[in-house]
Image (cartoon, rainbow, N blue to C red):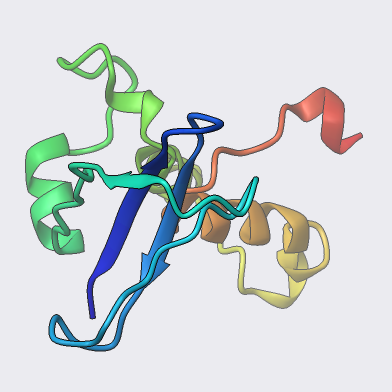
Length: 124
């Protein structure tokens, strides 16, 4: 199921068009101005990696990672936070900490999915 991108020759905006199969007819019209005077663009693409591959490439969470971009990936922020809490003996799932760490667990889960955590100031 490809997504094709076209640039409008009238307003210079790019529109994306989803088609079910490569053989489906496509009559692209600019989503911004409605012009049919559009040209197909070369689209960017994504490479999907497994979590295991991402962890192997990133390395183990440490206080001072070898890669300076380690913490730019929010998934590594979540991994590092979980590891540090375990080192401190904090079980976020225990009754003692469940309410205290409810928001932290949500933030870690979001980070593991690739969402950059809000700043502490924004959360307070």
